[in-house]
Image 1 (tube, rainbow, N blue to C red):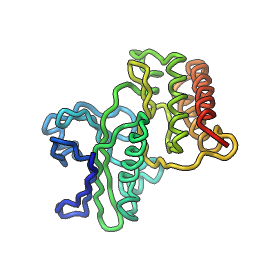
Image 2 (cartoon, rainbow, N blue to C red):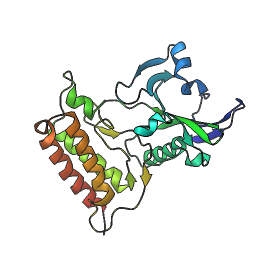
Image 3 (tube, helix red, strand yellow):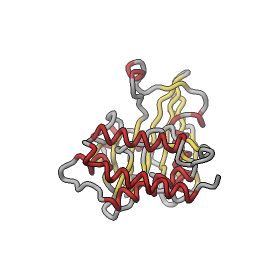
Length: 252
């Protein structure tokens, strides 16, 4: 599938990047939730996070639009603008590239559909569109009364999936319970690869360094969601499966 980069004559420093699919013409409305709503294409929005994620359909495909918004205290200074240092270094293009590489390797991550960067002087705003994955987040499974909590097999599957991610050398910047998804068949996928990067595995023991930091971050997010008795046994199974899986991939 070809990846196309265009610079439309919109009067601003706009760049689009998208996957050209046979028989489908790219529709730039995918970056604008107001136009999508007017066309009756929006099917929902993320209940958690910063109010910047929308679910919609386009040409028979289930997609997700996410605008890049800042978190932390810096959001009070600039909610959605970043310093521009080149197109390939923008948040959107970097995440598009990471997702493309992961999907090429067969890893269960969202397949990239398109991204947009709008430059205004020294700053830019950005958006990313991906194919929507089936399932519910780990956070939803743990906290919603209508969802059954994951069993030990699901926790072990999560450990295997995270080990596979780390074996590919991919460091997730925010691995938490909101970014792990489980479907009704027990399959696991990981979402939100903003600021993710590829790097070498830690020398010596693979289950250390940045890999272990990812696991510790996930554990902290679980502690914020529920009491230890709810997730402790499952997380222990996840961690053991992660160690086993990563050890099988790692050669000192």
